[in-house]
Length: 304
Image (tube, rainbow, N blue to C red; front, side, top):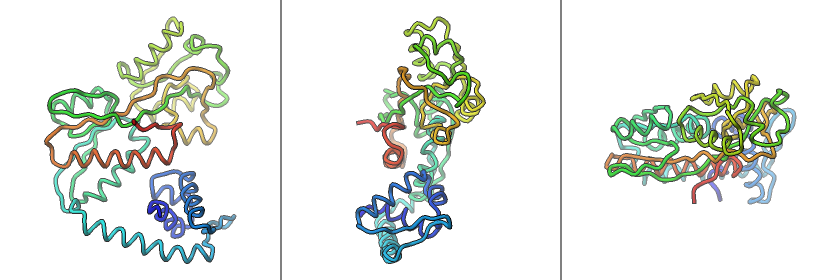
């Protein structure tokens, strides 16, 4: 029995809303629906009814709710009795690139504060280049960025990759068929900050395809990139995971039939010999695995 699915069911029953449950658990409504469907299939009964008035429990759902709440309380008590992490104190300085902030950062912070309530979590958002420099100088303990680091006092590990795509505003003049990347390269391209790994790879891809002078507009803010795309400013070269909501609402669309830019790599790097850091890296991997399971392989692919 999957405790994550039981927790989702309990929150839907309490909040009577798939949307509010998704917000509570830092996931999507589609993921909530998927978890409920999997739980119903596992138990072989219908647990919830959805109609214009909202969400209600079936008779079987009411019975399952009682057991589910007890099971979750038992699991929580067991974890608290065995887990001495809650008594740990200190500070962890985590640096993250914007892509992580806009995908699974909230879930990570929620998990860390639950496990280590006495530990101060200090977050720094910056470009991958600046994050690496701060880690090397000892100003950060853990960073989530794009490159493996090989230094004596630093360890790093591939976590995942975000597939990239060409994204445009629906109905904009850029929303059309392109015969080649060379033709696409004549449009204004919006991507990440200059000298970042994604920027260099997009530039190399377009130049190799024959685009003579690609117009790359470099922006170091995902929120700013998204706004520019929604306003029809150009074609975005970015992971669709960053604009999943806008794609779902039809405000933005993915251009089909063209080679996408290389995937955006996600690497965790950390200082060795710092208290709690190895455990925090483990939590990062666990939270990322849950996020990847929720959004699927079209949005993120875990490292093997």
